[in-house]
Amino acid sequence: MSSVHIEITHATVNERPILRHLMELYQYDFSEFDNADLGPLGLFDYPYLDHYWVEPERTPFLVRVDGNLTGFVLVARYNYLTGQKDTWVMAEFFIMRKYRRQGIGENVARQVFDKFPGAWQVGQINENQTAIVFWRSVINRYSQGDFQ
Image 1 (cartoon, rainbow, N blue to C red):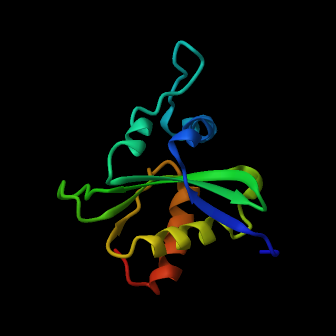
Image 2 (cartoon, one colour):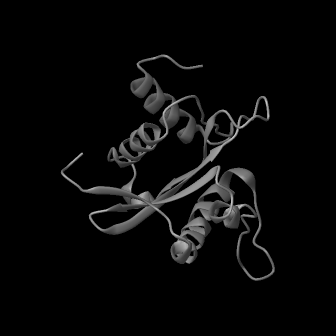
Image 3 (cartoon, rainbow, N blue to C red):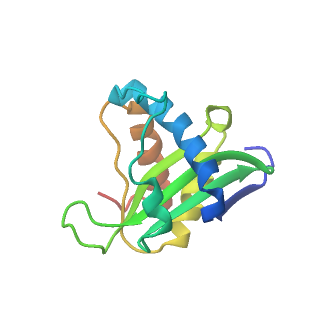
């Protein structure tokens, strides 16, 4: 990766519209795998987005590269296996296509893992093989192979 400045900042309530716009790009990309349709206003719907500014176990981040908006990360505190709030979850992770395959996504993931030490769950859907390969590779390197 060439020398770039990657910045991950907590998305404030005033930045919620920015994250909502980026979420549309993310959901457009993701519709290839989940076959989601647009709503009547021509937008996708992410029903949990507003929860990230009112529930303390959810944290929204914006990602910038060299000052340019690049993506977002949504982190939650929840264990999908037990229903307890004892595990960090990479709820959503989006890097714009322009910035992919440059090491930026891995850098962002590592920074987020470092911000929230402890157990993590990072899920992917079977149809998104690119995400599966990405996350297995990133987590393997980050954990030095210590993951399930």
